[in-house]
Image (cartoon, rainbow, N blue to C red):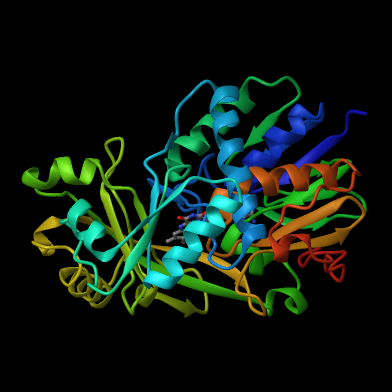
Length: 380
Ligand SMILES: Cc1cc2nc3c(=O)[nH]c(=O)nc-3n(C[C@H](O)[C@H](O)[C@H](O)COP(=O)(O)OP(=O)(O)OC[C@H]3O[C@@H](n4cnc5c(N)ncnc54)[C@H](O)[C@@H]3O)c2cc1C
């Protein structure tokens, strides 16, 4: 049966859920506080990493391999390219690299274990600690995030019964009645509601829920690599872990994008969303950290810097789905890996919105019992 679904927010979770709902035959209205897509959304960036390997976690690894396959199907659906399968390199101690390679292979993926010597030989432009090895996966790579959002919007615009409402913040949601109130007083009525407002969830959820969400701010450097290193970087996979004590990671300059550098040390807990500028302290900190990792690197490589926000469910540090009552759900927190899992999350949310029990995603925090303590949201 065709239902009217209201989707609040237009990040990757909301847009892909809207796509799945349309594929299910529903009529969908997507509403965002800004343009669609919105450059301030967590999802809006040049790229996101998809790696399948989750060390010591075969279930999540299998889910990531499913996500890899679904992204390829979505490219076919949207008739466009946004997934650069350049592979993924996770630097680990040798024993963990051997275990990781075995785990990924057993999960049905393709992986090669690299020794320290192999790493140095293959990637001389990365200065990795000499005692470390790595897992190199091939069914992995870089999702061109902005292009993903644009592809979703381009597809949705042409679907009968679908409406995209821009520049209108939602101020209240009553999931039981399926009503959504916009900042100008307009009320949208539907059979089901999804709220996927990323790091802004804390503004719409009641205090009992929002107090359990942690807001993070992370600084990122965007760089131009020297011409003499261009060929080496063109053959570099995504590197979600460089094996440093600080937790440095990088995304290579694929498909005309910049080399992106960041680290767990540049991620901190903050009270609220303010500006997006990278303070000199954080820029210098990252420049210093990468000076130790990339031969020849210096501030002259940096062409831009920005800060981004994301939220996590405090007890797990990961994502959170909340049942709001009726046919209403909130993707209340995304954690650090929701972009790559977005096609699976979206399928699961679309099933819930359509009144069906979803297949388990295989990501613990998303398959657990849902919190049903927020039937009405603040602001009503
Ligand atoms: C620095 C960084 C690196 C990351 N790297 C990776 C990675 O490599 N791989 C990976 O899988 N994941 C990664 N992530 C996580 C991933 O980007 C997020 O999980 C994902 O983009 C979250 O998407 P979302 O749709 O939940 O939220 P968002 O993209 O933030 O979308 C929320 C939308 O809701 C709208 N909105 C907010 N309030 C309202 C309102 N009141 N009314 C209407 N609209 C509203 C906003 O304007 C926005 O468009 C990273 C995150 C960060 C910050």
